[in-house]
Length: 84
Image 1 (cartoon, one colour):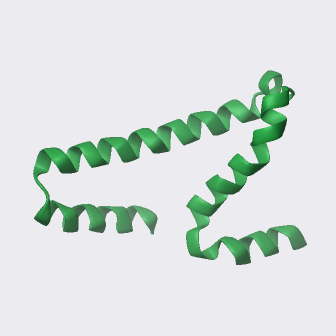
Image 2 (spheres, rainbow, N blue to C red; image 1 turned 60 degrees about the vertical axis):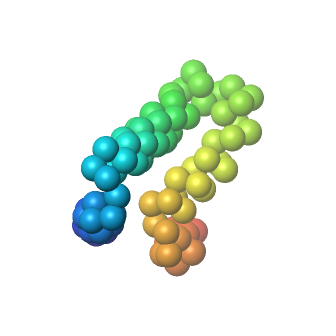
């Protein structure tokens, strides 16, 4: 569903923005997604997981990623995951 929404937003913005600006916005969004995915992977590596830095920032970072992924359904999914 999110892919369809991003595609639709891209097509809508493509009507109003120049093509090279639209490509730059897309590249920034892709870079942000890849950097979030890599940092999430870094937090799950055992050697890094046991450091003081990871212990301090792993939970807030995980909450941020889940809020981005689940957007308006964050609270219901969070409550259901705490039940089971």
